Image 1 (cartoon, helix red, strand yellow):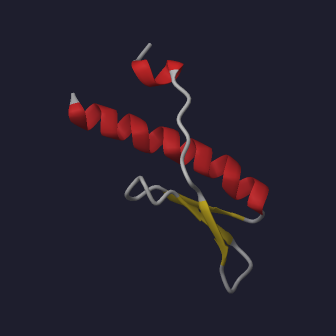
Image 2 (image 1 turned 30 degrees about the vertical axis):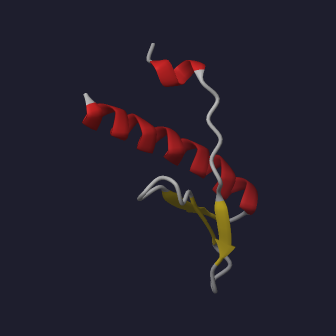
Image 3 (image 1 turned 90 degrees about the vertical axis):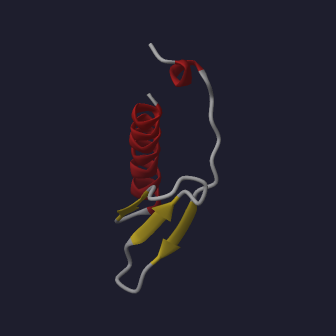
Length: 63
C-alpha cells in the first residue's frame, strides 16, 4: 500500500458544458487531468478516476 492510499486529497474541479451538451471536467492543479461525461454526475465520477490515474502515473515517474 502506498502513502497516498491513506491520505485525503482535495482538488478543485472545473466543469463546463460544451456546445454539444457534453460536460467537460478538468483539474487545473494536475496537468493533463481531464475527462467528460453526459451529465455533471458522470463527469464527476470520471474525474475521480482520472485523478487517481494521474496521481499514480506521477508516482511512477518519481520512482
